[in-house]
Image (tube, rainbow, N blue to C red):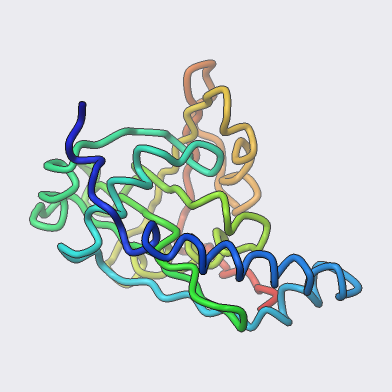
Length: 205
């Protein structure tokens, strides 16, 4: 048994409350006329920051349980995740989301790694809880990652997609974000983006 997975997260303790807010969102979605009105009417906020020690149980939980929106499905140990913030070649963020109906808590994780070339970083892991899919939060999260890397002097960003039985949903994520294909093989595909030509997307909220 992996004892690391037994820690209860804040999201676990609020599961009933989170479920009730999802019911309210679904009722609101049915009342609105279209997706754009629904998304703008949610009045969503994205709160993005570096993970702290208190976040680690939830980050570990998402890394191990998230399958649908997970570009590479790499399963890191608690010890690995704990040491990432102390490494010069690794960076990353956690995403929290709240809206007019309530707080969804910590719902997204990114792990970014520096390549041998000084001006190139790769998105090692990018994942998001299935309960917030369909709200374009992933576009806002990626936009923050890319703007943050550009501010650090990064020129090229590499994104990887490793297919599984469950993550076909994100097969075209990097292409739709403006990345260009580098290599496309059965076991994985790699995409690259030149940040000098990057134009942040407009979002419906």
